[in-house]
Image (cartoon, rainbow, N blue to C red):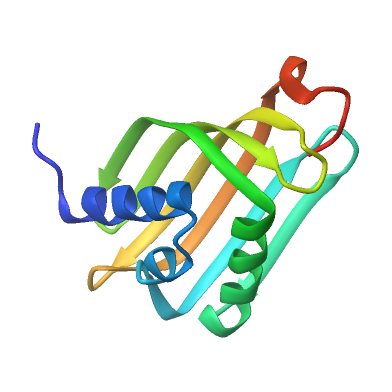
Length: 136
């Protein structure tokens, strides 16, 4: 089965996130894209909402600076027209605490004219055993 344009767009986005390439990650998004990222950590819920790249870029820069992704694995990509759902996981290493947590993510994305216009990510830590007693 060949990849579709949204497949390539999302795979490029995850490659940029994995390598810490802020500009590469930002190229995947329309200037007026909407963003929501939510999840549960061991100690508290996390939530980010932003409208447009002017709001989201500094948040994404902070996320890339703080958290290094490793062993990123895309489990599934489902494309239905402009809507894409991606189930993936990665080891998330906090450069602040030194902890690494295996984390599962589900991204629900809307693509229009070859760019992401709506991005929703939900994450959940899976493996607390590699946490070394700290929080991410």
